[in-house]
Length: 114
View 1 (cartoon, rainbow, N blue to C red):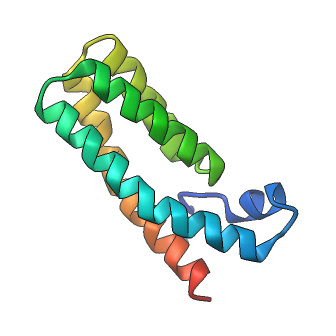
View 2: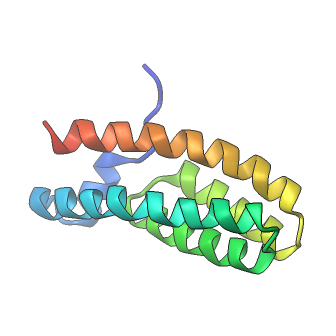
């Protein structure tokens, strides 16, 4: 079995096991994270380190809410490298982040639809 991208058990615990709230927050995350990811992709395409750092910071917070340590770590790495104006490193982290985000969305859909 592969390791989950977000920690469902810890996420539910942080919400006092409120299943309805968990489903609402995950649905909101799955709606908003692609928008912010697209904004980050655009900032990288435009070589805009400041905007990339801002979007990475925003994604870091969102990923923290859903208790995804892997996504938080990658978003932090993107934020730091963008602040350092090392957009090549930011793009590398972004590639991995995007892949893991897709997997996380699949896991969240599995939970929401269960």
